[in-house]
Length: 129
Image (tube, rainbow, N blue to C red; front, side, top):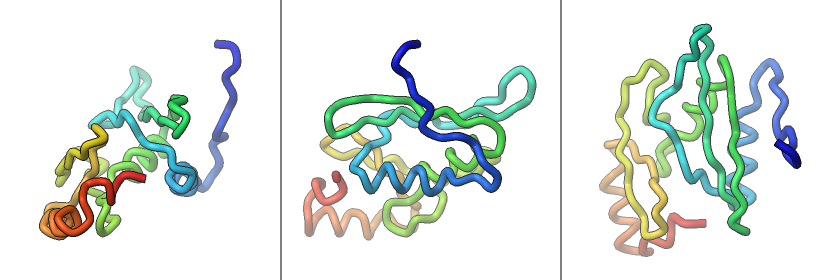
């Protein structure tokens, strides 16, 4: 693949949280989020997300091992309270809330009423950067 660049180099401790927040701050959207972490044949965890820029550019972030688990947990957080809505072991409290932009927001079941109140007051565009 020509023209590809390494965006993130793994370090210990993982800085996936910073990477995800930097992307959100720069108005990138997570356009595809698989629902679970994949285990490769050798037993190593693997997770990836597709990221879309404001200029319609797309790229994929791949993560392996503990970084895959960190990435999964970080992108599956409630938009209201910030708590993880999917456990690493597959337990899920995930509510996918659709917006007009065909983008899913993840909401903790305890926060769904608050999200609906925000939507009534501000409209669905309130949640779209």
